Image (cartoon, rainbow, N blue to C red; front, top):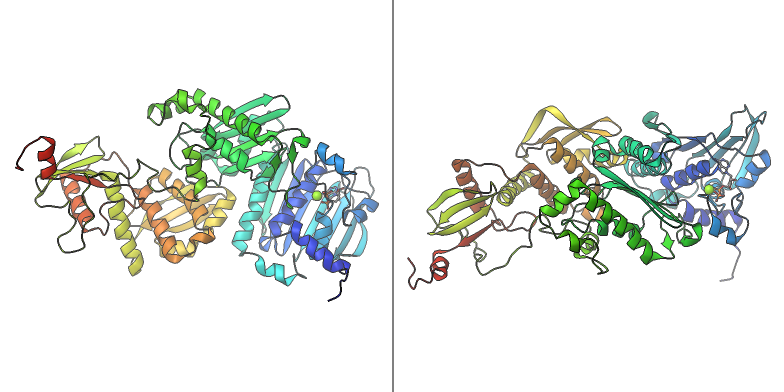
Length: 593
Ligand code: ADP
Ligand code: MG
């Protein structure tokens, strides 16, 4: 085979693939260009999840007709002139590749006009060539239209996801830009319908960012946020993040920005979790974290789409962020409540020197909550009865007569069983029983559904809502009928009859669903059923409920019939049994009575 230089068009298509992977990556570049041009308003519209059209219109500086033609040439940029300029970068763009790539893989039209120009200019083209140019009526700013993305790269087209999935990503890109730039107004329209329209707020960052968070994430999430601002020399940290009593089952509401750029930085994320060291469990804060530092201190050039960044002083930044978050949490009233409820003494928690606390490992080690996260480690103790042998007789802990004696702390049910002591964690047991009943119904395809007289309304981010709507049919099969009453409002119309959801529980369930259902690793049908059953059971039963004696007796009979009566669906123990011989031993009796 001989070595050949690739024709320009082929090389351009290959290069474009690095910058433009999907509709959301084009949109990100176009919005960043508008922001770099000093826009105070950015209006986005998309059709067919951006596959048919992405249009970004801004009121920024615009371009001269000459610059317009140059803007689609490779490595043409007005933003840097030399490699060293990267160290003083204050713009989003710098590679001069976005418009060049868009022209290579779509039908592109750019219309632009500077203040004072008597006409706007446009160029139009596709497959790497400008095919037409001309004049249009003047209107300051720039409109970029990207149509039929990848029409000439069928291989790429095949890799795009379903419309709802691509749409969710498009929306997320606008959400990120809007959270990072509260001083700019943003609007988004999808298939002709408005998703949101956000007014610019040029006031202090805290109130401006909070207002954005309220509009994008919903009032409930925003109300659970606290704010902090801390500076150290040229390092500046501003952050909104959840109070310890307002955590979520997923990480979807986490936004990190470095020098206004949305990033997924493990360093920042881990630092945030470390800041919550006082807490246990596998819950996740919502956050908008803004870190600003000299451009020379951060390398944004390690990723083609600039999605991750590298800090020169990784360790120091980690400490700075986690320390600031930790100090802020310790100061809040609600944080002290969390300490009182017994996770760890405040003094120790403030800043242990170890590099990765068990909490951080727990959160980052696995994608889903560790088993037993809601309570103590599952205890394996000699006191626990052995696993039952399958058979007619039921589990070993069930030795008739089984009599209900009473309830402790509104959480534990105490029974006499076989002359010994049987203690049941009411919540865990209810979860187990519900779980098995629901799984039976699911497997048989005979879900009993309970329509809600008043639908429960849940507020989510628009991208989360999109994610969930993709699963509307599947959820219906699982007994959950959902709908929408707006881009960020979902309605729960019906649930499986076995469950009861409070407003809060429904909110949590939806948040979790939006993350879990979309994960390819959960695409296995059985796994998906298991996941939804586990989640639903957890959220539909409450601890500290008073049970009547008949209800307690009923529960123990149901538990006896369960396939695994020893564990809740998360793996936490449901009960322990101290048999008669053990009681005798403890009281040093020589004969068992
Ligand atoms: P980069 O942003 O890396 O410079 P792009 O290909 O995204 O590269 O854009 C090339 C150039 O086109 C920019 O440097 C800028 O001068 C100009 N440009 C692009 N979009 C706009 C816009 N919305 N308003 C004004 N100028 C723009
Ligand atoms: Mg750019």
